Amino acid sequence: MRYRLALLAAPPLALGLWWLAGPKPSNDRPWVAEQARLPRANLEGDLVHLTEVRASEYRSAPGSRCPSADELKPRTPRGG
Image (cartoon, rainbow, N blue to C red; front, side, top):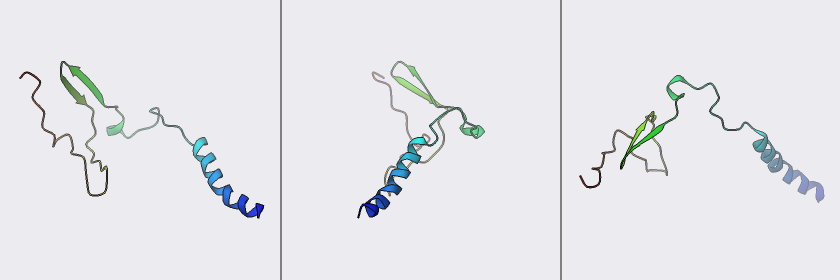
């Protein structure tokens, strides 16, 4: 009985240890040229200007999607 329990517990334990010892997130890696720059946000009063944003399509749930930056319409600043 104990051996059976050990055989059932060993794979999840080994997978967890492998995941913890695996590669760590880093920006110091060889990136593809068009994805090598991080996005930036510049604040000018109430406006935020985003640069270096990748043109990607993100899906948050099956059947739904987030609009791309080209589809978003800028809002008028407050008081204007």
